[in-house]
Image (cartoon, rainbow, N blue to C red; front, top):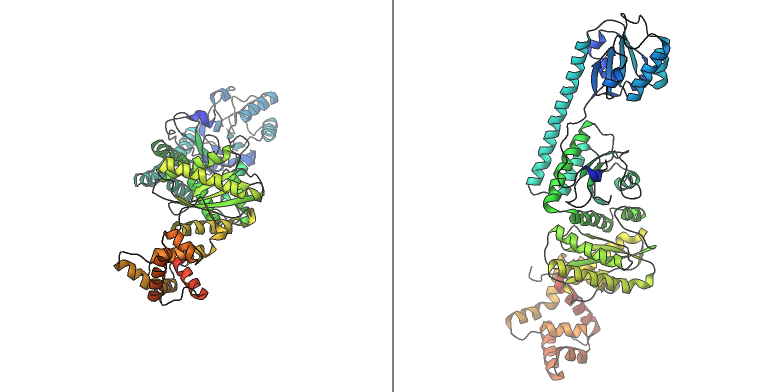
Length: 546
């Protein structure tokens, strides 16, 4: 049965955890120690688990077993002939018996050589009891240990489920459930969709070991990863699609019995959350957004950036990438942003572009990387991205307002700083008039002033240079600041300012004279106009009255 066939629309059943004691632990129980057990073959199997205990004295005992049992016998059904003894051992070994325990005395004074050699050949753990012990007491003792261990594990599982359920009831989402699960297990947890695509992962990683690398290594072409490296539990993704799965890999350390229990419980909680809120797109956006934010903030080294990007869905199409950032208007749930980003990605990929989009840590800011085959394609790709984003935000959010910043074509080793530059440029461009997209190379001053927006010196500077005009405009109907801004935007050419303001020259000169009087400046002096230019550019980012 595949994970996709396991179940579709209902959460997985919470099966009892497979808690067992080992052969070594069973031999240490007082009831068996009284029999002076002697391990004569298969020492390597002493740490194997015991599923159950069975006692029997017939030659066909294997037909009554399922594997994993500790078999107690006096040897009556084994037979005296060497060929029968070898056949008896081979059949039990093929079945996967945990251990064969033979009480010496009534049938064998000592174990026959053929029996011992056969056990060694097949790797079957063979134990001789040199003193008589009641088999019923052995059975009760081991079964009690197994049942007690299962009960204790079920109690721990109930505690885990209560903790995860409380997170969901408190309004937390799947990322919070996965983080708590990873904390309980002590290893990273990965949520995949039905096609094997990584939706989200959580959990701290040991120094020197990358969780995404471990996840990628555990996968195989086609998207269905074998379970050889960790534990997995199926998770339905919807009523029609194939089931995904919740996977834990032993990246930070080995896993104990609670890992299987916690994973089962977490899978049920995640299934309910997905069925309730359909958070797949949100998770994709969050996972990719976390990666892009970490990249922009320098938390991911450039040397590892491309490998991690490929792990979460980026299909490299060249040696260069083009960084994008956008400040979008309006508010929306994470799931809606996920739909926006999906639409953008689908549109660009339909035109042959590899793209990775995600939401930044701050609501409303989007980050993206687009593969670039050649630097000369920058403008065409930037136009395509801008069209796709505005179409998606208009469809999903009801607005196409966005300030989009486009960085320079960048190699992967330098993509982090380039992405951060684009993010800061997009944030600073909110104060600018709308444009198809903004070029980071032409907005260095704007970005620098935005970066200093909380600096007291900058606020005081704006107040000193523009304060009288701002005060004038608060008191009077006819505003002077738009005239000063038009003059600045026109390169301090009066004819250009008059054209932009639809004024005749005399009306413009009257306003300029009033501005010069209020600010005590000479608008023909390049040094003073440069100072005013800086103050005007900084004004949207500061509050002179603060």
